[in-house]
Amino acid sequence: EPIDAMVDLHLAVWNGPAGDSRDTAIAELYAPDVFVAEPERARRGHAGMDEAVSTLQAQLPGTVIIRSGPIQVVQDLVTYPWTLGAPGQPPLASGRDVLLVRDGMIASLYVVLDPA
Image (cartoon, rainbow, N blue to C red):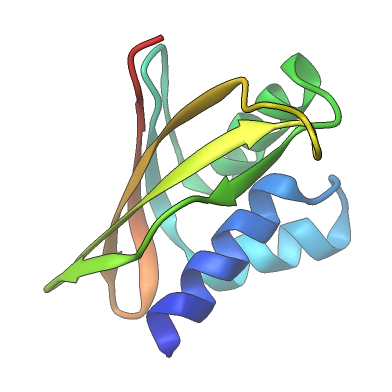
């Protein structure tokens, strides 16, 4: 399934280390002008995506994002729930990603956090 593979690669970007492989994945997966909307900040472009991932990893080292429910698709909108935490530990946070897909690439990412 192309959407399943897209979501898997998206999560691999967020869970993977900085470096050439992440840079390549970002270039292949996200539109050049990708919009990244988080509760506290919005960023644009591949550099903005890399900054968002690096910021999260610096704030919560050793954590991973895991899809915690089904992927739902409506036309160009893709959404699924996730949890964030250290492997084997209770989640520190949960939420939902909302992706807008354009021409086979992620054009927008909205990160929606569940209430604490």
